[in-house]
Length: 135
Image (tube, rainbow, N blue to C red):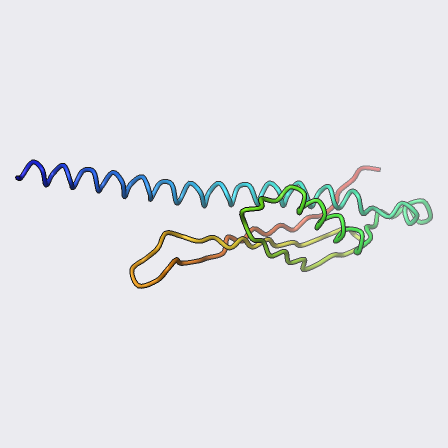
């Protein structure tokens, strides 16, 4: 009887350890994917939003605010995971000098807990980007 209880303990401990590792691996992967997607999308949208007429006229590198937001949302939607829900918050868009601040919040759910269905929390990735070019 004593050996069988140890077997039940080892198997239950193994299952709990597997669930724990699986849960945190999923969180880390989601956060890393969101960070790289945010970084690449912000950079590409800033390059797409450069106002070339202002550069030709005044030799100033400026970005167009509306064009940046449009390009950012389009590029992010093309590459985002359909399994997640995102909230995009664009805080600052300065046209000259080109600077943006963007935050992405992903709602993540966990394993069921006692007395509740699931617990939810947000994974927040924020980036502040300044467009630097050599001209």
